Length: 296
Image 1 (cartoon, rainbow, N blue to C red):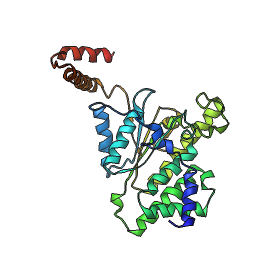
Image 2: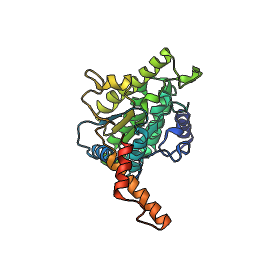
Image 3: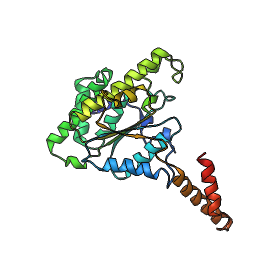
Image 4: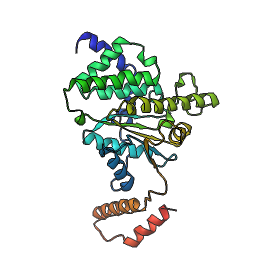
């Protein structure tokens, strides 16, 4: 990479959030689904990801705090990375000022996509050199310049089979994206104006996904997880940006975790049995009793 290209790539690096990567050191040992848990919903998500002919190319998973959205996203991210289909991931966090701002999301995604092919990277560098203020522009303008146009250049080049390009983009915790909170003393507890700004930025991102990725027929499949806050609800309801174009999963009672809990306890009890030299120390009924207690 020549000096000009290095300068352009370096400018991009100043506008990304390394802590938001799925394998960042800041997120070391991030929560993920334990083996044999969340089997049904994980399978449903992976089926959606791998069915590239399905018309709905955005997946929105919603659930209350503590419903396991981030653990599910981490699990899916690791599976996609292992299968070499993960294009990019961004894990928002309201308590981390480097990844609770919408302004770093597009740049961070573009950085990861740029690592997948040198021509894609060169196109990103060219966009940054052409407009050094691109990171101050709207999310849609950033997405067009740093994601859409570089991909179109790659597609036109015919240097690779586009079908082999990593196509999964994950955004976790959209509700934790609080706009531009530099002036906020406490980014967790927002006043009404700050909350409105945060919701507007979240809605802007969802609208940009619809306009830039879906309308341009890019092959990416975008998986967004969030609490069911205003921006997501309005995007999915009739008249919203993503109405009828998004596949929706609500982490609710539909996904009964009893089977997951049973398999987890059985595996852990078998492990304890090996440690104490007594594989008969528990009974099937004792596991069932614990599962019933856990389900309330």
